[in-house]
Length: 302
Image (tube, rainbow, N blue to C red; front, top):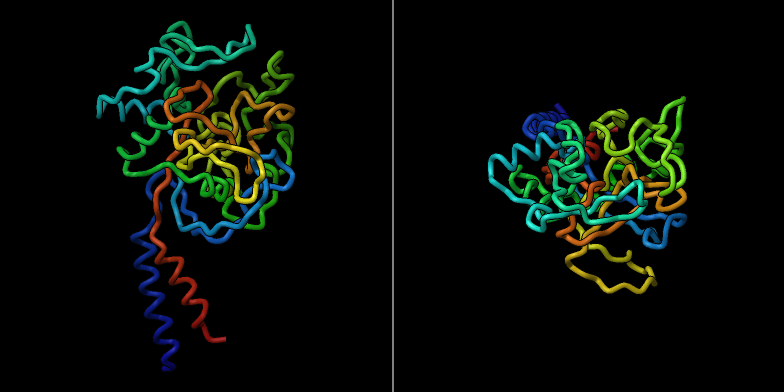
């Protein structure tokens, strides 16, 4: 037998074994990584200029960390969030149309003690970056980089140029594709998508990789310290305690922030909890499969 065929079948066997061992952890999607363009020429100033970034293989939670999942963490560890330590957290008063600190607001009562209790299948909110990182470490994971987040939002396709994770229109086939603001912010929200605040994770369906709510619902913490992209002339003093968020939220109006676009970015300080901020976790993935796949591609006889 041709030695190339023998090598081919040996590598196929090794590849299959590695594939069996490196299946995505439960509830996570696998992305093989590669080179992708980050940013946009047509977005806000902080999304410019676009640049290429090499992404290593990684796993990403299919949905935002839920209230139920966060409760398990708190019960197992006795963890106390930053909002609980401060005794208040940020909410947006719909009647007064302004942000305010609400006494007693925290992850279980994100709108304060007079508001409804957070539902188990909704994303946990009023969690700071510190809280999100603590949960991720407890779960054996980490926060995603903002570049991994954008790569995943583009469904792992470097050439994908759609405005949103799901396409270029918020309203498709008679349905809203995400939970965002409809109406005129902050004066009126028509709630045409069915939600004034958070929605149950996955309510608006999944993308081709099984990811949910990669636009709208709540902003998502990432690992990165916030700063302008390389080559951006915008004056900015980098603060290691200010981190990047991605994904937009139920408060995002396309005429104001349009934060549910795949390239949109926001930032906040690491101790801040807000009622429209949450997170999902990531995890490093073994690159063996990716490398073996490349090797096989080179040795297959033409």
